[in-house]
Image 1 (cartoon, one colour):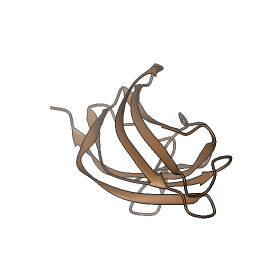
Image 2 (cartoon, one colour; image 1 turned 180 degrees about the vertical axis):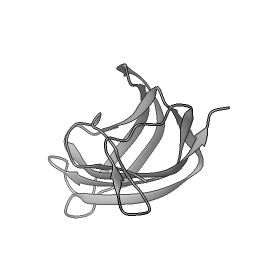
Image 3 (cartoon, one colour; image 1 turned 45 degrees about the vertical axis):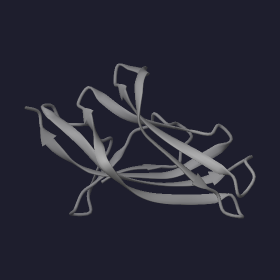
Image 4 (cartoon, one colour; image 1 turned 60 degrees about the vertical axis):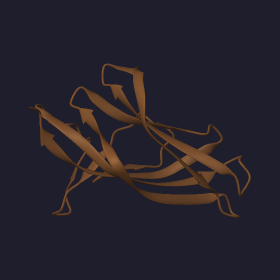
Length: 127
C-alpha cells in the first residue's frame, strides 16, 4: 500500500507501508518492475469551498524528470458533508500501471486540501 499524507505538495513522496509494519520512504518503483494500482482511497477537507459541494481528485502519472509531462489515469468526485469533509474508497475496475520512470501526482480543487490518499496494488516484472 502506498500512502500520501496531508501536505499541500501534490508531487511529494509516497510512503510504502509493508506487511511487517515497516515503511519504505520515499517509495520508488524498482528497476525492471511496474506498479499496478487497483484501489484508491482518499479523504478531503474544504478550506474555502462550502459544505455539501462536490470536489474532485485526479491522479496523474508523470515522468520523474519532467513532472509537467503527465497523463490523468484516475478521476473521482465526492460530495462533502455538512462540515466540509469527505472521503471515499474505490476499487478500480481495470486499474492502471505506472512505469519505473514515472511517479504519481494528484490534483484537486485549489480551495481545498486532500488530507490523505491511499493506493493499493502490486508490483509486477516488466516483460
